[in-house]
Length: 408
Image 1 (spheres, one colour):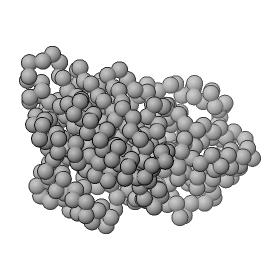
Image 2 (image 1 turned 90 degrees about the vertical axis):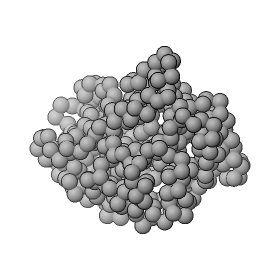
Image 3 (image 1 turned 30 degrees about the horizontal axis):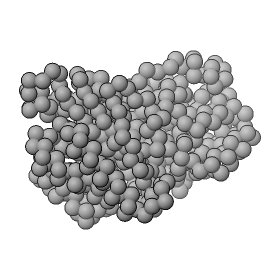
Image 4 (image 1 turned 120 degrees about the vertical axis):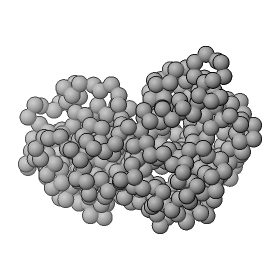
């Protein structure tokens, strides 16, 4: 059972769909049921063998406060409803392997009844915690895990902890002071390479009207809920860039950017020629691949896409409600993987200078970027196949009969 949640942005659902799609391709006869509160799940391509059950949506403010996204109900009512839906799905689906994304006990503890049920009634089921490379700063994460009892929860319920990163960049065991017994469960898997069928660069550039002598800059802020500052700065930077380069821009604003702010960006962009704006695309990797420079926030998926494609980039990380993106961007920038600007320092002029520096840089393979381990997907598949051999794959049934539940 993979438990994941998108109360803010699209990061978790995109990452988990990438993992589930790879598992489906690499493990025979795999059935994956996604139980999701993401309002955007239906917009992504879901392959044969994967299905989902929709949970009522929750949201998290930029200050970190949990709330109800759509329904006119109290938070505790929605949490109770989600908790009961998750448990009912587990009881009916009877998963053989459970993957839990990021929060060991779920939002507001909603996952704990399901964990207890699995331990008591599905003795052969394996429960694995999946953590991205960085959760938040140690100063925030350590007391939060202690207060919520996460160290004990992981020790009681979980068989392994899979880290989507490498200790050379962020050593979870040391940074978050994991107890020794918990460290023995940790397995570093590397980062998630983002592979998909890419449309030809020429097709993308033709779609955007980019001539051969024009540079293409892609600007993306993920879901877009907190991307307004970066988008506004880029519109100003684009006007300055036209003084140095022949340039074409694509802004993917994000489906969660407030309508009034999206309107303001569109109106401001009309002052500079060559700026195209999309609300959302489920083919981000193709647009990124066709670009000469990418401007993005520092989310896990965006960084993995930059690493996979070895793209020149300027990263402006989110710094609240958590510092995860800031830490990741600073660690990667220290390896000269890309250029980083913190939000408090962001101005159109500074952004223009950083983009111009990247555009003028020679085209060459970044050896440091190439050495970042991107082997998470095959490692996770191998771990699940090993985990599923007993008793699932040795039970005499046809195929692997491995079932994964993704709760978002």
